[in-house]
Length: 254
Image (cartoon, rainbow, N blue to C red):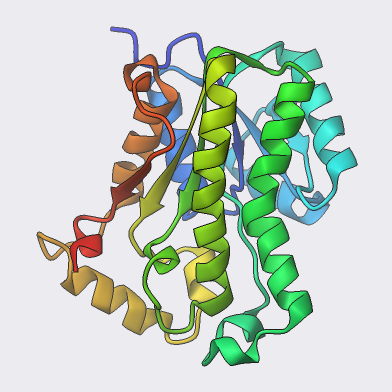
């Protein structure tokens, strides 16, 4: 039996290790028949991704802080694979000192950096994909966000603001790319022990609080988030655009 992503090619940006949400998404999509193409930021990150992905051809360097790097990466992807059917953006960054204690600690430079990597990069990759005619019609773009975009989560601070900007970007991109046959949505994933979360002060308290507030008392899993991502990349989600889909087992209901 064919999967819901058979014969589709999906670009995944943001895999750091086997606990990355991006990796959970990639695994779920591959199980549904997709060919997944992975980008990595630099040579150091390539080593980590290479341990998970044996096929060197499906690894492409891309630093989303650099527009030329995005253009080069997407040009290489199109040359190797032709057009693709989807893109998963799972990239965010803020300096650790900009996250802790109080928003009043945030510097202008740190704020700009968090916005550039965590929010603007989605627009940058969507723009480059459009300019290079990389995406099929229909196609899907999905990004990863978090509940801290709406609520003042302790020690999340500048990243919460960046995630709010990311979610607004999803809505505007969905509006402007819909006529091109491209859907744009976000998954608001529940807190998990990923590399990003462990960079937050007192992250164990955050994880405990999140689990206590799920509807079944269990934390969301990589497989559950990945399954939602696979659905958003599939033609089954053609009616969904500009949405923030919560995959947090109800934590956002508080």
